[in-house]
Length: 118
Image 1 (cartoon, rainbow, N blue to C red):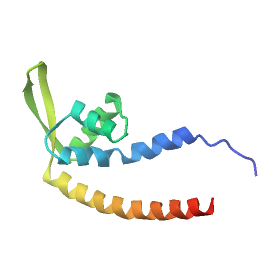
Image 2 (cartoon, rainbow, N blue to C red):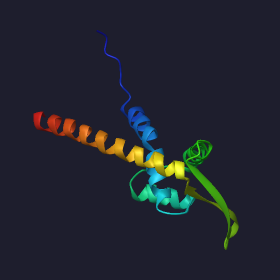
Image 3 (cartoon, helix red, strand yellow):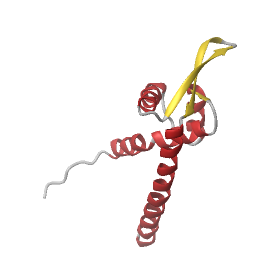
Image 4 (cartoon, rainbow, N blue to C red):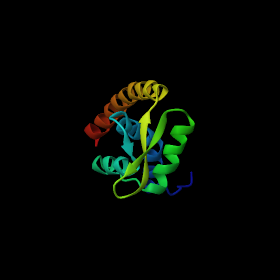
């Protein structure tokens, strides 16, 4: 069988992309959040995301009825969009949290087994 190069960096990017909606919802669940606040929280969690990635995700979350936003005046420039979870978003976040806990336990179990055998 021919060996095919595996792009590890691409795999990392795809893994993170698949998970980003969950931490974004977790951040917004804490209270009204402005996009730069969300980016800062993600950065603190070592999930570096650029605006060009965040805004399409926020738009998709809004389109799916998980978040809504309100315009607020800003002391330093134009009005800003502040995002909050909808009731539907709260329910979905609860289900995602359950799923994450199960998935996390499973992956942790597998990584521990791998690490013991390495």
